[in-house]
Image 1: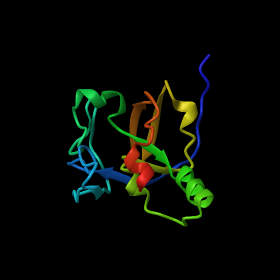
Image 2: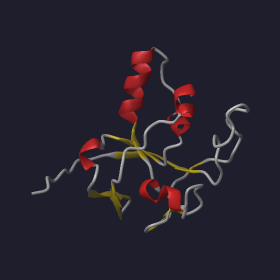
Image 3: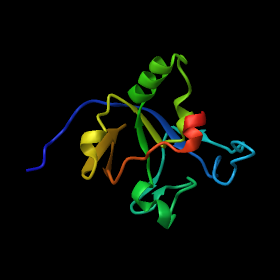
Image 4: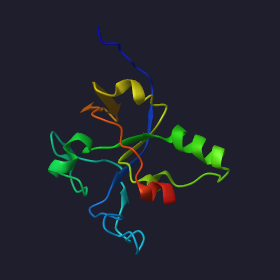
Length: 135
């Protein structure tokens, strides 16, 4: 039997970026690319977020939309003694407060916001890349 989770969350940020900031830039550092902290985003089943750099890319279908719990970032900042930092630097599409993401892995879940219900499937963790370590 599959367990059921339900809790209130807050959607803090919706990141949509049409270009890659890091791919192929090991020496140059991050590119200055347009990134939008959007009020809303359009999702297409099996493709991801319209206008995002990974939209419709076969290599990213199992991670077409990435989520992050801001509490994890806050805990890292506290542990490292860095103080608060901009969660958009992680380049994750949806930054949430109050979300327990680990129990969702491998299953389907829904996020309800502003009267809209979005159903997602949690495929795999979106592990940090080397650039996130540097940021």
